[in-house]
Amino acid sequence: MADTKTVAAGSSKPRATVRDKDRGADDLDGVPVETALMLMREMLLYRRFEEKAEEAYAIGKIGGFCHLHIGQEAAAAGSIKVLRDDDYVISAYREHTQALAKGIKPNAVMAELYGRADGCSGGRGGSMHLFDPSIGFMGGNGIVGGQIPSATGFGFAIKYKGGDQVSLCFLGDAAVNQGSFHESLNLAAIWKLPVIYAVENNDYGMGTKFSRVSAREVKNRGDGYGIPCHVVNGQDVLETYAFFSKLVESMRKGAGPQYVDVRTYRFKGHSMSDPVSGTYRSKEEVERRTEQDDPIRILKDRLFAAGHLDQAELEKMDAEARGVANEAAEFADASPLPDPAHLYDHAYSMINEHGRLFLDGREEAPRASDEG
Ligand SMILES: Cc1ncc(C[n+]2csc(CCOP(=O)(O)OP(=O)(O)O)c2C)c(N)n1
Ligand SMILES: [Mg+2]
Image 1 (cartoon, protein in one colour):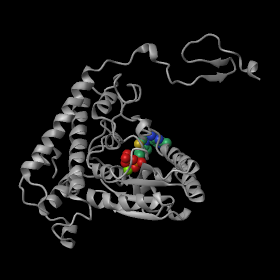
Image 2 (cartoon, rainbow, N blue to C red):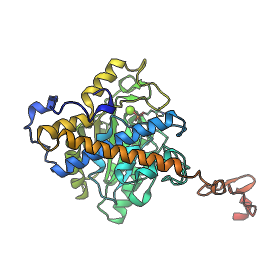
Image 3 (tube, rainbow, N blue to C red):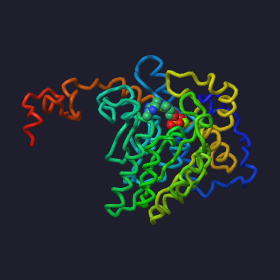
């Protein structure tokens, strides 16, 4: 359905997807009904939250870079909702919904987008740097591929300490040609680290189609390191959830690193400042994929067909999601700006030929030569 704003509206008669032909009407890929309904609530929240962020950006409440995940929600819900609090998740800059899925409160995420003191990173990170290590959400990274070595490090820490957690690393398709990807997969393979490299394969890196700039496809890029490679339909949240449930269970028992090509599609422009379509992808393509691959519509069809949800219940869920998104925006708007007195908190000091410079203006800086 092209207009995401009307996703929960319309006829209660389900439309068949290609895969519906192959499955019974009540088949939820083995996902319990309660879980399937929870996934619907989650994805509605992500969609309404990001539509609210889009609106806030348009009127200047949010500044800087802002990359929406609209269209890719099932990739976040279907994988992160499988995890425990003590598992790790790390991502690139398209991470609003992943932060929500891991458990950062909508108010704290929205306040961060607004650059306010109550944001999850104290208002100093913004859209690309959402963090909450207390629940294993390790960011938010603006450098393409920058998160991949960190994810590998979390995997090393888990193994070193003898835990059974997993480290889930999201990366874009354009990141599989970064050096950091290859170095990380090599180490993860040698040390059999519990890391999932989940590529959100939306076919594009900014305005460049993946096939134009890559000698090999996305799907088997772990092969060179002997890492098992999987492909999952990231628009179908039940399929994704069922897949990640099994994968994570096997990893808790020591299956080692895994590589997943999560097939997905971005419905919006690369960032808020980019057009939705253009010379790199046609309007017709975006409209077709938005209609055909909307993860909320696909789940809605499956739940309606199985008799587990009807139009009135869906609209109630949607209204709740809108309510949470609106409240988050009001909360963010009322939150103060960060106090300039704390500008240098958490900033590193640095050493140069003048000695150690403290970025908070302390004067007792010893000279580098005094430090022995
Ligand atoms: C090392 C580095 N090179 C280039 C950029 C500029 N850049 C920002 S996003 C992006 C595209 C990444 O695409 P992909 O990894 O597929 O993620 P998607 O945006 O599709 O989610 C590029 C090249 C960057 N941020 N970091
Ligand atoms: Mg991409």
